Amino acid sequence: MPILWLILLVLALGLIGFVLGRSRALSNAGGDIRQLHSLPSYYGSNVLLATLIPGLAVLLLWLIAQPMVIHGQISSMIPESAYTDAGSLNLVMSDVKRVAEGLDIAVQEGALSVEQARDIRTEFTDIRARLGEVGVALGSNVEAYVLKAAQRYRVMNAVGHWIMTGAVLAAALAGFAYALMRTNKDYRARNQVEKVLLGLLIGAASLAVLTTVGIVLSLIFNTIEFFKLYPAMDFFFGTTWSPSFGGGSELGILPLFWGTFYVSLIALVVAVPIGLFAAVYLSEYAGPKVRAIAKPLLEVLAGIPTIVYGLFALLTVGPLLMNVFGEDGGLGWMQGGRSVMTAGLVMGVMLIPFVSSLSDDIINAVPQAMRDGSLGLGATKSETVKQVVLPAALPGIVGAILLAASRAIGETMIVVLGAGAAARLSMNPFEAMTTVTTRIVSQLTGDADFASAEALVAFALGMTLFVITLGLNILALVIVRKYREQYD
Image 1 (cartoon, helix red, strand yellow):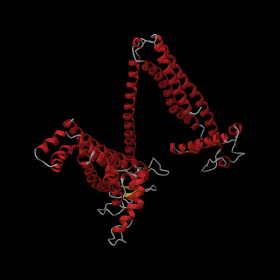
Image 2 (tube, rainbow, N blue to C red):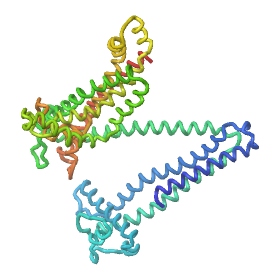
Image 3 (cartoon, one colour):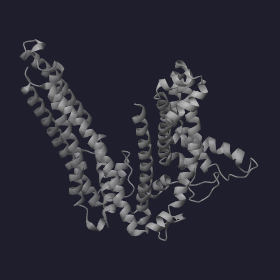
Image 4 (tube, helix red, strand yellow):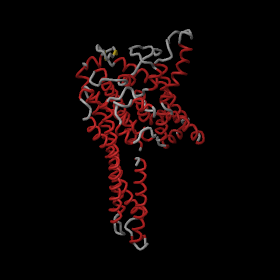
């Protein structure tokens, strides 16, 4: 049974439990709702949760554990001569899974029978050509041990899937029956439902925290491995970025950090004035009808995918700047459409809604009494905005700008398409440069050897970027919290 159908079946069982639990409670109370401890919906919800939580928990744990168990069993079938380390073993296992999936597709489309897929051999059949007939492309000929492992993989995966289906349904039915048996007019269903929901909320919060901890630990461990292979002083203070997987790499972060800082600075120069002026207009001058239209339209910019902004920088903004600042324009400052200025301008447009929306909310949070007092003393509208509203909202506005800065520092696609890939220390904003995020992508693209400094440097770059953005976010939150404590 497909996983989606299994989930729908458990959900249907839970809905049936909701109806039966509610009906059983009312029946036990003789149809008088006043005799119930809780509202009827709580009794139904109790049975619903008792059905869904065990069933879906077993499903989730099984989906995590089964691939690990199968991987361990199948990897033991791969001869040691076929791989040299864990990385190459994973490549072999990916071939095994690809062949197993191809055999499944061939059986589904009728190109192979179940018996043929189970008994087929490389000695008598060209597996690559046979699977190619059903649209499964393989990079190389299939070795005998890969085919044997793939056939075993199919068997274990199918058996595990059927056992999973039985286990999930058994857990759901057990919860269904247990909760329904306990349902009566005196059962504290509301307390139980609220306790379960509280546990789910705590679990969701804990999952978010643990995910963050896992990300940080993975960065830390790999960064430590990098610094065992490459000197930290050369990394943090080196002025040359020249990775070479053949050896002799120079991995200084300063050119990357300078490019990141330069692009982010130009973006903020564009986004902060426009976003702040837009926020002042929307909050202080625009009427309700204009605000209801303009604010959502402005926030549409935040929903545009960054790859679209990157294409806009590459195809539109870059050529426009070349017409003005390039050799054709007479100034000769730009040698190509990709430059810090190109990426910075487009990124600034992307950041406008971040600054404007946050600043608008902060300005609106300034007490109306402060405005009324200023106007009552004879100040004009513009004087009130400049001398009362903006100073009062300044801590929150600074926090919004810092949040936008951390967003700019972590941007990738706009920089990849708009700023180029040259790592250099230059003050010319019309030259191509690169940033930390683009180099992380570059170092982890392709067949990277994770035992080499050239691949592990991506984690050191990520850790450095994480610390910088974390510092900016903490600073922004401290400023915003101080503002809220003052005016809430």
